[in-house]
Amino acid sequence: MTLNSSLASKAPKPIPQLSQAVVYNGMVYCSGSLGIDPATGNMIEGTVKDRTRQVFKNLSVVLEAAGSSLKNVVKVNVFLTTMDNFAAMNEAYDEFITAEPKPCRTCVAVAQLPFGSDVEIECTAYLTVPSAKL
Image (tube, rainbow, N blue to C red; front, side):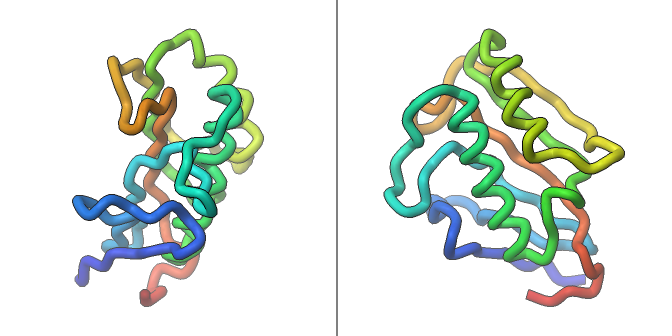
């Protein structure tokens, strides 16, 4: 089996130390995504709900470039800088994660996130066509 990285040109460019996603054995492993506007490279202004929406737009593009989609997500890890944002993040989360069964999920509060973000989300999904090639 081959390990392949995936790069979506319509998502924020990753820093040199990581891949946006890695495809292996029929699964797509997405790096943590922030609420960055890919057109400007800047964090979306507004609330954690606004940034969570942008995170899922970015993850959707990354998953599609790798041969998957948000409906194929099996595991989500959410990082918040305060659990005070839990309800607002969940409202945006529910707009994008609609398929049943819902994916497994972990949500933790952390002291700090890159670039001053208040939310970061990573996910794992299966390929839409397991034999898809990059």
